Image (cartoon, rainbow, N blue to C red; front, side, top):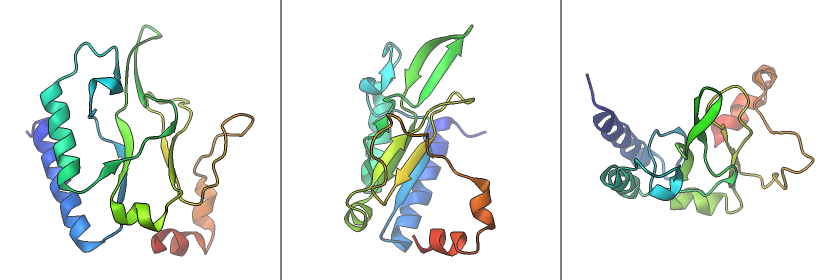
Length: 156
């Protein structure tokens, strides 16, 4: 059985292989890691060595974390209906080539509805303006029915 640290090293090994194949790269998802004590509240149990390994892995792959709009913390731990811990486990990272191709892109932590995670959305078209008075953006499965969706999505 792999430890979580070993699994992360395998994951980053895969990212470095992808990076060699494609110059534009962005990765969104639940990393189950934080970069510093600023990404946890309360920050009583933060393992600084583990944060440093995560940061070094991102640096090795030439990936920079994207500061999101919306909620600062992307995950909450609930105990008896109360939030006992908040962390930024979900994030978007990208390399410089992606930043160059999409200079106005944004990562947005959307509203958490039924999960303990806030979904992360990547806006490459500069469509996001303000969460005030705006319905949350979300993926609609009906988009998969459109003939032009998959070719457009795969082009990026």
